[in-house]
Each structure stands twice: as C-alpha cells, then as structure tokens.
Amino acid sequence: MRIFGALTLPDITSVSSVCKDWYDVSSDNTLWQAFSKAYYPSIPTSEHVVSWKREFQTKGIAYRLIRQQFSQMHSIRMAQRHWMMCGVHMFHPVNGRRGFDLLPPPPPEIAQHKPPVDTMIKMLKREDELRLSEEFQKKFAQPDLNTIHVASEIQEQVVKEFGFEDVKVGVELMRTAPSLYPESQQVRRIPHYQKFNRAKDGALKEGSRIPNSKVALINGINISLHQYLDNLIAPQPKPIPVVLISGSYS
Image 1 (cartoon, helix red, strand yellow):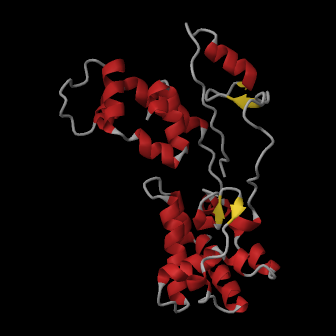
Image 2 (cartoon, helix red, strand yellow; image 1 turned 30 degrees about the vertical axis):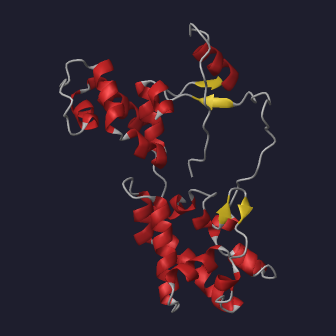
C-alpha cells in the first residue's frame, strides 16, 4: 500500500494490469478514494462510496484513456497452447520450492506414506497433463482467480485420483517429490515448473551498483535504466525511495 501510494496513476495502472498480487492490493478502497480526491475532486465526496475504484473507473476520463493505451500496447496474444500461466510463482511451495531451493523432504509422519517411485512419476505426469489442459489453462488466464489456488486444485485432484485418503499428505508428497526420490532424475524432469525453472540467485548484493539494463517504457520508448532513474529522480526536491520490481511476462 505504501508503494502504491507513492506511484503515479499510469504506474498504478500498468503494474496492477500485469501482476496478480499487485492487482489485489490495488483494489483497496482507501487507495482509490485518495486517487479520486487527488485527480477528480468532482467525483462524489461522500465517505460512504461502496467502491471508489468503480467510481474512478466509471467517471475518470484519464483512467480510461490510460487503460485503453495499455491494452493496445499489449494486444499481442500467444496461442493458448503456448501459455505458461501455470508456471507462475516459481518460488512458491505449490511449485516445489521455497525461494531458490527445492522443498526439503517432509517430516517422517508424512514421508512414511510416500508411494513407489513409479506411482509418483504417474502422479506428476497427470499433474502436468492437467496443468496444460484447456480447462485449467483457461482458469490460469482468468484475472479474478489466484493462480496458486488453481495449481493447488490440480494437485488435490491428482491426489484424489490416486486414492490418497489424506489429501494434504498426498499434496505434500507431490511437492517434495524431488527431495523424496533423489535417485530419480525422471521425477525432477517431469514437472514443467521444475524443468523450465529459470529462477536463480543473482550476483547482486546489498550495496551493489544497479546494472544499466535496457528498459522499454509503457509508451514504447527504449531507454537505459540509469537514464530512466536520472529522469525520475532529478526533478524531485528531495531524495525519494525507489523500488525496482522485475519479473517474467511468461
């Protein structure tokens, strides 16, 4: 919320349009109440508006123009079969990770229920099949659904199909499979969120100089990161905090 409060309206629009978690935060009613008062004093001044965001979207001309521009710039649509929406949140336990590391083996009371490796391989293949199915790809693409919940739903379905009485135990075994079956390379290779994981700890440390990367602005202009930051910071009357957030569109 503090970060959103410091951003401009175009920044709010662009970030919340491509990041599900930030979209959730950007729906906060008090945030849009502040934007309404700042940009459009004519929007109802009552403190009891049910949805300030709806008021702003409906009556805020600038908001609609920004949304239209953003939609036009991101009008390219990949074929459904090429979507990797199911690969989001690579650091989340639902994808078998805690940060950059694989999940460790579960405690003994759960590990004792692990099935034969051949059964786990079939379970992981089934999970991959469901993740890439048309039904679940549509769910992953819906902005109002949390992709983590969708991925969890898939794993729970697989566990039930394979006859686990305790769904939570079965899901935990699937997520920790690479650590539970370290001798099986196939277990590591089957889940595409393991096979195609590109996340790795980088070389940047606290105090490191920010690399001068190439960036493309929302309006399509290419610029260096250092130049962009200079343009952003220079006009400020006093130093301001700057937060850089990056991610993969896929």
